[in-house]
Length: 314
Image 1 (cartoon, rainbow, N blue to C red):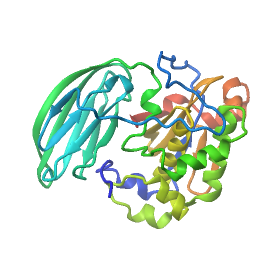
Image 2 (cartoon, rainbow, N blue to C red):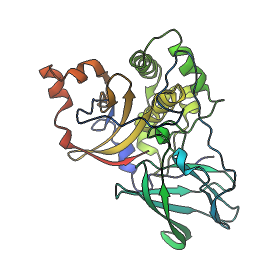
Image 3 (cartoon, one colour):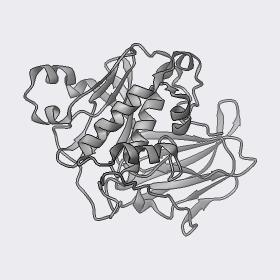
Image 4 (cartoon, helix red, strand yellow):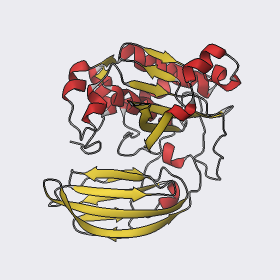
């Protein structure tokens, strides 16, 4: 069983009607640059590009109850493994964006992947062990300098929040859905249409889900039900698996809790907040319309970007 994350965000899942799940709206202020790695934005119709995290032990910190493998920070991730008697571990990561990312490990002897979502720069990594109820004891702290070989890498690899592998049903499905297509925009549309046509919003789950919930994308496909977080994780995983960078974002618009996916479109750049879920229906923003920025109704739909506050990128 996989656990962790969102320990204090039950309301995030329990209010489907005011909650908006947004995928893709054009960031007009600029696009992220490509790096030198082969693992760049590389969509090829009908093919998968699943990157596999490695923990080869060449650079580690900690030990018992928590071992962190930092061997491949240049690929945009590190791997944490809790020993059998560790109980529960809290990892906090402060990057160049000055955001404190909090992760939790509750499953022993199961390597867990965590991303460096703020890109290249200096990170302060702190680890804590739960000792009773809400009390934690410090294990260690270390400053890590990260230099990514490609800016897209944190948004192509799987991680704790967007968890998939070459054997995932969602990966083979993404390849099938995009076979014969000619562009990443077509691929995005095909995946969106499949997910929204085949996955039903689970109101009962939304009302009862625990705060430490983690999505299981293949379970979502199997049950054909899910909450907003399931939709977001599944869509992001399918996009990443075919070489399309996707960010899973958590934040607010005004006082309303939101989740959305930002996607990199080769002809446009990073696209944000273009699929909206209002509790009853889903809407897909055409990235080409967002790119032109000329349609008044679309601009009204997108709204003022300052109204959106991103807390975390996964």
